[in-house]
Image (cartoon, rainbow, N blue to C red; front, side, top):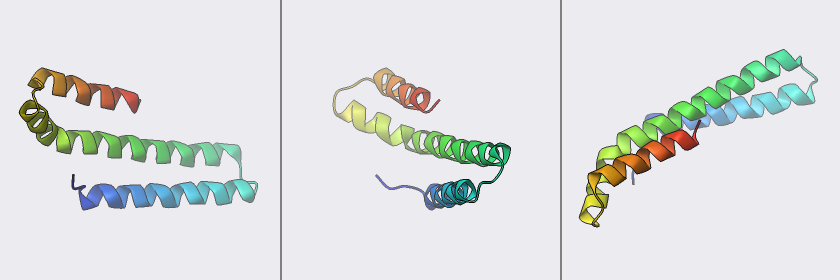
Length: 86
């Protein structure tokens, strides 16, 4: 499976943000600022998960149907993946 460059870049930004949070913690920054940054990281990762599932849903459904699954089962699997991210 090939991943969109935009998603990879989004995750790289999230990685950078997370490193920034660790630096903030080491510097003893205010907890409200740290929580704000952690929330931004979480939102970015949640969005990446949604994009990966959405962009690959058609491909996954087609592959699963070729392998004997129904389209409904494939959609249910995608829904479960999205729900795990919440």
